[in-house]
Amino acid sequence: MEYLYNFFSLTVVISLIIGGINYFIFRFVEQEKIKKQSKFNISLAILFIILKTPENFNWITNSYQIYIYYKFAFSILFMFLVARVIIYGVIDLILKKNLKFPQIFYDILKGILYFIAIMLLLKELGFSVNSIFTTSAILTAVIGLALQNTLSDIVAGIIISTEDTIEAGDWIDYNGKIGRIISHSWRFTKVITLQNERYIIPNKEFTSKTMRVFSAKDFKHLFSIPFGVTYNNNPNHVIKVALEALKSVNNIDEPQIYFTEYGDFAILFEIRFYILDVAKLYKIKSDILSIVFYAFKRESIEIPIPRHDIFLREYSSQTKDEKFKEILSFINDVDFFKPLTKEEKDIVCNDMEIAEFGADEYILQQNETNDTFYSIKNGKVSVIIDGKIVANLTAPHFFGEISLMTGEKTTATIRADVDTTVYKLKSSSFQKIFKNNKKLIAQISDVIARRKLQNLESEITNEKQKDKIIETKINAEKNRLKDKIKIFFEIK
Image (cartoon, rainbow, N blue to C red; front, side, top):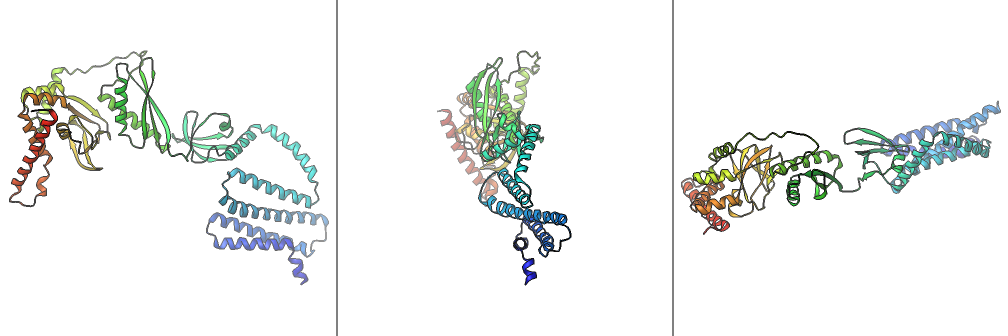
């Protein structure tokens, strides 16, 4: 019994309890990080028991000096073991899961626990704690003067963490560059920019400068793009065209355009929009600039060149007659215009305009009004109904004719798959033609009806009556369209 009593001293019992608990955690907890910590604590407990055993049985008696060193070794080992258990057991496993404090708070708490453990150990070994504090105060003053910048960063890091100003995952605008915070420590913050550049920013930069933060907790972030047009443009028309173009841009919310300033050589506007993912900012800006450029080009809205620049503008060498002949040659190949007389084709050639659309830009939207006839000069478009692509069209196909002629809502969305050039003709041109040639309404109605019902043949199973059924349906649709055209264009 005496041997057991000598062996099982209070510190040994505590070490055995700590080792047993950590062994239980090591066996049944699956997290690799916790298993490593438990394994290390078990090793410390076993090492302490081995070092403590000779002292419990008074085996070290030949030298007092050796005993002091030996006692210091197992004492600091015991203090370190207890401190680790408190830190990783109480702080990491309990407090962090239940209390949402900054990481720096836990680091300070761990430092205080280690400091207390060391002070208790030194006091136990007979050192004067007061003299240590006196010496450390002088040493602290010397270190403080030598490490002013470092200490400023550390204090700033504590302030940032305690005030929850920024955190990993947030985006910031630092010296004109937008980047995402990937980590935050005592002294500095690591940021990776949209250009994939890595910055290490001292924490004092966040407390001494004004910095824009796009918090990861916010759902939407506001950005803006300035632009200008020449003074011969109507501001309301510019805003209307740009807002219509922005409907084709994905991943933006609530686009708005403001008239901001009268510039030296342009009237200035600003596009404001919200995005959900800051990482897509460059792609979104590129899409906006591209789509607005094509929209302005179609509407002859000129983006100015600074007046102090000297430039030469090269005008098209194509004459009016050449343009007329080019359009006439084109419409002669389009079924829709074949019923027209020479005089009526002349009206079309004089009124027809060219418009360009960029890839992925929407030309028409489903269930909207339309007053323009479109015919593809070059490029390719997709016909989309209820979100599904049902056809692809190339030159010289046309679209927009049904809604133009009848006033009905558009039945499909038309999207440019590549950069596409189209000829377009407004309803006013057809108004002039129909007033002079009412018989043309029936011919146009027949072309539209046959085009609209061109897939009807595959739906009819009665082979004997197929042609008759098709013709009956086409005539019915033709008459319906004829009546709608007369009403819409007010033709009696």
